[in-house]
Length: 125
Image (tube, rainbow, N blue to C red; front, side):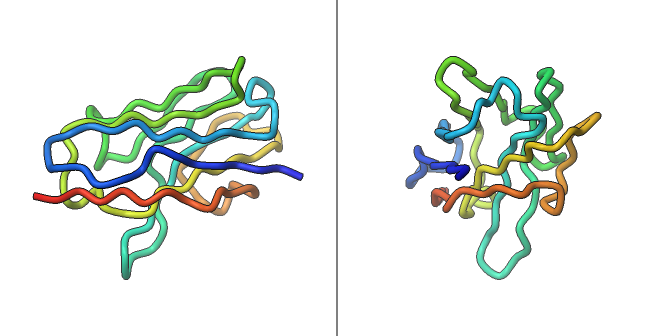
């Protein structure tokens, strides 16, 4: 059974930084797509950043230049570092993975079949 467990969320002041972690029960080195998605109250879940097995990254326009997604395959852990946080970044952040073959990874939640429970990030101004 695939398990994805997020951590690192919390309350941060605007302009601050945070690093989210996702501990996976799968081999992240062989997982084609992993990523971070978020859902703000009253809004649909949206893609934030995804990374391919071969390290190609894809970011939402809203976080480009402020976010970095990375993997530590020795620890089977996915990370998301974000800086210059804004109130618009307030959301529940979810880790996702898809074990199927993908030529490239998209910011499309329909392409991911495993999800974590989420970690809340609240940015206050």
